[in-house]
Image 1 (spheres, rainbow, N blue to C red):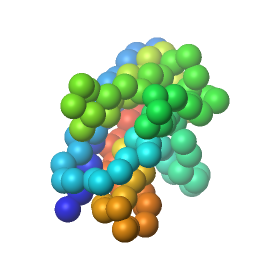
Image 2 (image 1 turned 135 degrees about the horizontal axis):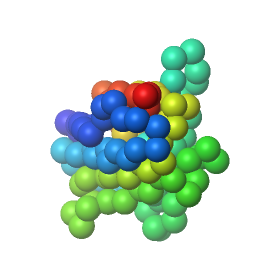
Image 3 (image 1 turned 120 degrees about the vertical axis):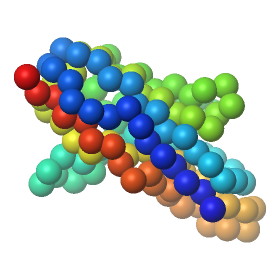
Image 4 (image 1 turned 180 degrees about the vertical axis):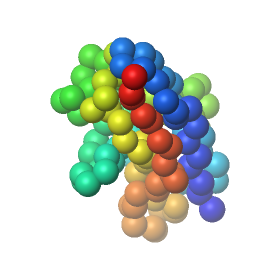
Length: 121
């Protein structure tokens, strides 16, 4: 059974930084992308950052130049470094992995439980 567990959320002042981490356990046969999404109250879930299996990255327009997605050497931990945080970054942040359990399984999304990030003075 695959589990994604986020950590690192919390309360930070505007202009501050936070680092989120997502630890993956369980086996996934093939991973096409790992990333972070967020959802603010009353809004739809949106892409924050994604790291594709080929090494390319993509960021939401509102976080470009401020956030950076990386993985640890073992590829089982995905990190999101968030700098110059703004109140509009306040949301629940979700870790995501896209992949399939076996060669015959369909591709699907795996989600963590989410971690709250609040940017406020």
